[in-house]
Length: 255
Image (cartoon, one colour):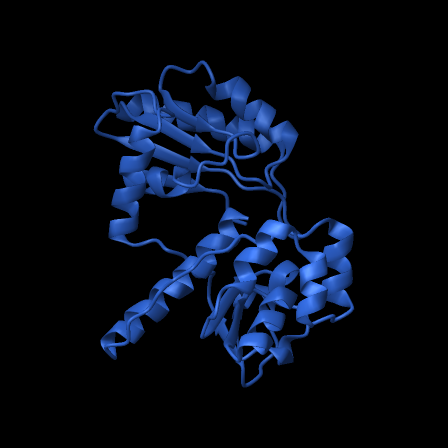
């Protein structure tokens, strides 16, 4: 998942910066983990088959060939679905295992970095953060903005003022309704007209199909909307960073 990858990359960036201060050179490899099927993933993760031969059986040939040839000192992963792979490879290579978000079998890992909203337990190997790690800094925003402008997704030219809207999805304590989106759309259009501003919008993978449909109805043909991305249809990795970099005002759902 792109969001999980960005968290891992955010931590890797911090580690590289700290190691560089100690004049330690680093080499970063990013490997996409693909299981043969969800059944193989379940068996490997939840039956604790942390042996290399079991991992070889569970992964696709391409994923297996990539991970088996790495000899890492640190392994970083995000999310519980691949935490078992992290542990297995770290054990095999005598590497340090670092996980982000809440993993299965927390005590097995050398370090777990978990956001406060996930309600992590306090332990020696746990660092609790106020939010999720990410790559976002000024350079990241500038680069994402440039790539988004070159992607062909934007309806150029942009005005001097842009309103960015990031729409998420439902969570345990929050729901986005169709009526909410209709009211939001009305207010955004009114504000954009008043400010002579362009509108840049992206939904997320968690946005419901009903909300996506309303967003399309409201903005696909709206002249002031210069970007509309439905993440479940086109999840371009530069959209969020690009919207943040190009927008003077950002509206984001609170979940």
